[in-house]
Image (cartoon, rainbow, N blue to C red; front, top):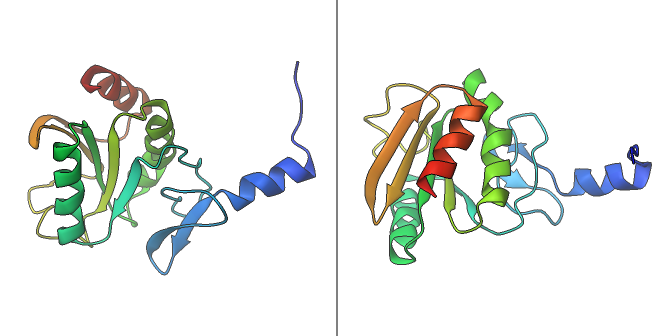
Amino acid sequence: MLSFPTEETKNEQKQQNVSWTNNRMSTEGEGRGLEGVGIPLPVNFHGNLKSAQNDQQFKELLQQAKESKQTAVVSYGAKWCNACRQMLPTFCNLSNDYPDSLFIYTDIDECPDETLDVRYTPTFRFFRGGEKVDEFYGAGPQRLRDRVWLQS
């Protein structure tokens, strides 16, 4: 049955959106996870979507994934990159579809030491046991879905 969103459901959805604030990703309302770059993004329900705000935090998140034996899916992007903005909703949705993996968003301008070898944005890397096992770059929601499925 087809139903249209009511004003109440629209307000609930707005409360769970994340957005850019002062050039940082933040969460509004009760939602957890990344928020869009000027676009509303889905809420992360499993707490497995993180944003690394600096090089040290990025290292800690990868270490956390290694210790918990989770696959880490890392998105390297930039707030000025249109293709990165296009891929963020897919990245956020995948974090809900794969709760046993850790999804990390890293802005190349905020984590310069850890992103020195990133040549294109967006770049997606997959880590298992602390080791990089896969990588690809460029926008392509279906390619990202396929790779996450393959590596999870």
